[in-house]
Every structure is written in C-alpha cells, then in structure tokens.
Length: 242
Ligand code: ADE
Image (cartoon, rainbow, N blue to C red; front, side, top):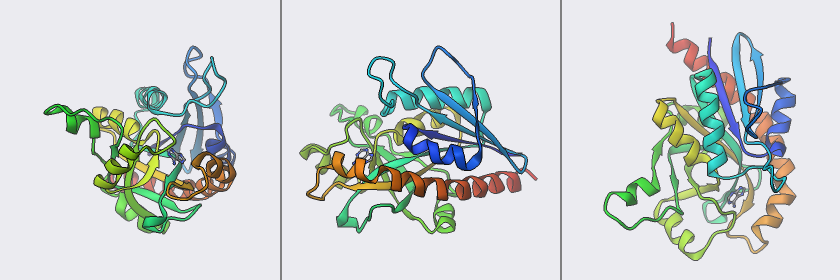
C-alpha cells in the first residue's frame, strides 16, 4: 500500500487537513521543531510534516531551510512513494489568478532569488526541479490550474524578483516548493506541488494584508482538495505496483 507525505509550513495551513484526516501526532525527533501527524486511509499511510515553530521568535517556520529539514526527516523515516508540498501562495491578475484558486506545479518548480552569475552556478541557483510526471493528470482530476511554481525566502516581490519571475514564467509564488523538490530529487522521490492562492502579487493592496485576510479561506480550500489529491496519488502508486 502507498505512503504519501504532505509537507506544509504553517500550522494554519495544516490544521484543517489534520482535522479532516483525523491524523494523530507522531513523536519523531523532540530536539527539532518539526511536527509530524500520521493517518491511515484504506490501508494507505498519510504523513503530514509541518515545519513547526521557531524557538526564538515563536512564529511558524516558513522558508526553505525548515522545508528541507522537514522533508529530509519524513523521507528518511517513511520512504514515501510521493511527496506533496502543499500550502498557500501568491498569484498574479496578469495570469487571471483569483483568491482561492488551486494550482498544481507543472512542469517544474524554480527559485527566483538565488541569482548566481557564474558559469554553472546560474542553473543550480534556479533549480528547475521536475515534478512527478502524473501531475498534469492530477491537475485535471482536481479541476485545478497548472503552472510554474517559483520559490524564494521573501513574501514581497522586488523589482529584480519581478524580472526573474517573468523570465522564468512563474505563475505561483511561495517559499518552500523548490527546497522540498530539491530533497526529493536527491532521494529519487516523486514530487508534487499543490498551492492555493491567498494574494495577488500585482494587486495594489499589500501582499501581507491580503495574505492574512485570505489565509483561512485558502487553507480550508487546501483541506478540501488535498484528501482528493492524496487518494489519487495513492491509487496511482498502488496501480503501478501490481
Ligand atoms: N505565500 C502566500 N503568498 C505568498 C507570496 N506572495 N509570496 C511568497 N509566499 C507566499
């Protein structure tokens, strides 16, 4: 039977999914902030890794470093068949995104803020991590949009970010996807990205204001769509292993 892992950054994003699945807390490594929840569904195992809370600042551990820590631990302990990076993200009115829209990462995730103008390092900085080949079908199944997810460690978009995002065809802006994908790539684990839109980056209202106003709506939308996505991925894995 399949093991599907979902990696999330914020407790507010993960809470509705944990409740929906009735997932129970799993004590993995008490010396690290990572929080893990496990549920069983029709014989499949669902592992939800949440980055946890920063011990110094008491806020959710958003960003790439905590995402690597969570993904690495979950992969080491459970060897999941598929890893899904799930959470909220920014979109753009220029690509007709709306608050609450669901996007599946396709065909890759990139980084727009690791700009290293040295031969060879440039492509490493961008990353361009491929997603699971079945992601396109998954998007269709979920009636979701597909697009390039672009990762950085900033909520805002600088002028240079804007140029890079346009050049990279970014449609979804968030803070963990490429980091999760990088670890998956090292371990050969299929990677899927599912993001719901909390804010429009090109809207006059400040991003942080939009984000806080729409976080609950977008997280609820995630908890509606993720169980369907998890089940679909598990069925795919189970069908392939017969
Ligand atoms: N998460 C939600 N909205 C975001 C944005 N605009 N940029 C980065 N991460 C986000």
